[in-house]
Image (cartoon, rainbow, N blue to C red):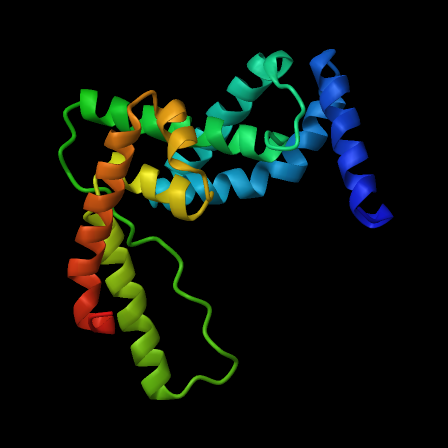
Length: 196
């Protein structure tokens, strides 16, 4: 590992050690380093800025309370640890919504559009909008659990076993959720992209 990569890791290790001892400045630095990414993960799950902010806040509160349990290892980085806390907070958020008897679909209409090229042609602009709308529509038909499992598997690149442990369910349940999510996404996206 070169020196450029070692320095931030050493600083993060030091901040984690100090934060474990109750140093608020060290925890603030961890927040500054990981906050934007955690917000983006939460926003992808909910499509709502307000909900994403709530989930981000819950994530860091839970991380602060359980920081003493975090153990360094090559496979278990602070980033993956706090990402998992965020995804669990998102799942808790969906459970709370269900308990309040909300049956409406979560809207992803606030999701930002794909970044356009510097000088898109009118045809490219139209195509980008259609593709973006198709993706938002496809994601909105997934159940909260399917969206969460899809995020963990294909965005966080977690393996099936880790997803099952995180969500406290069987590996076969995770595989079923992934299969169902892919089937739903394929059904709505095939007209846009054609069959593979």
